[in-house]
Image (cartoon, rainbow, N blue to C red; front, side, top):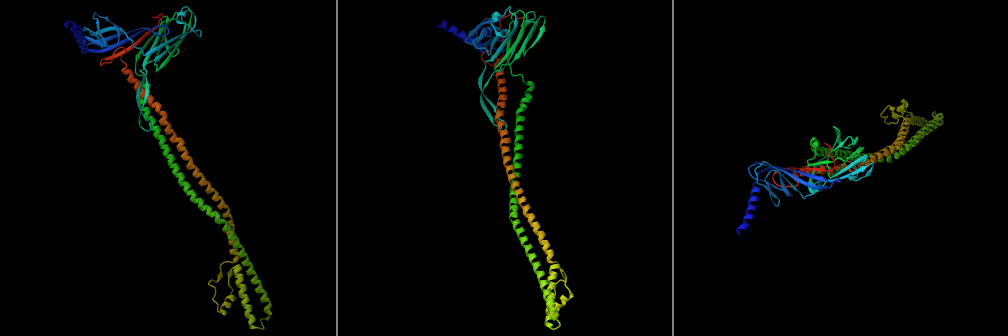
Length: 490
């Protein structure tokens, strides 16, 4: 019984010691040997533990075949717990992981435009093209929250995010084998007798690198691929990115102000329309009354013409009677009085037709008849003057009749035009500023989501600090180094 408890006690002591280990930091370098097409053949993780030297070092990692590669202390492995009974401040150990790599690689080769196997390239000549496809395999679904433009509402959407990796691909090509190279979107430098080619890319989730070379005798170089989890290199643009939501909100508010002005214009157009309706109603009544006025003045002309003709007839009749009875005046006093009455009647007709002052004989006649004299000594106007005024009034009435119709037509057009203006302003606001604001909210959602995803990418990059290691409070970092077969020009 006692013998069985000893191993258990040792295990407990080892675990307890590892839990109390003072590891300051750790770093993982993942070395991967790829085949020519980019498939992993071997993967090895080298971990550097930086210890405070005061107690045994410990780590927590999912590795098999753990070995100390610098030092004499052999590791003790209990499940994922790895302990080193040493006080060395720097411990390096290696092991084999079982996880899939975060970056997938696919490499294709073409010679003179046709696909060719890597194994058949050496010694060939012609135009070589190499295509490297990188795939980010870290996709996870996160709830990403962003602020909606215009409304200020907080929206949350499940979104696929990736851990961003900065990937550098390098190779060296001997000038004697490759007299001319084209790195595509990469760069190259001539170092001695070698073209040094380099590319930096960010697969989110994929990216492709291509380069071509004129080959006199192919001796395929090795490709070195380095990947490091890293926040997106946007530091120089960060302030502008942060200002983008504020700028979009200002545009949204500005469009809203334009919409407010359109509302004011519509209110003004409605007021114009209301006034135009009242004016149009007055013009309609005027247009209806103008023909009656013209007809009335025409009848007044007829009446004054008849009156003038009647007065002329009265004067002629009076003169005729007077001529007949004048020879008899010396015989009869009454006939003389009748003659005076005819003179008075003729003068009234004459003054009525022609105007002017009353004669003394007419005034004496009135005195003799004991009739009151006229209140004025001179007849103010003749019927001819009245008749001329009536004709002018009739001409004006006829012109008013014509123009009243035109005025009514014009005010009717104003009514219709102001109503159409109001209607078009409503359509302009609905299909213009209101639509722009609605589309800004919907279309900017993807932009705001992308900005929120950038922050999510940053969080993923900061969190991806180990590959084989288990989560812990120890500061950690990780990088991946992958290499394909072939010669590597120094």
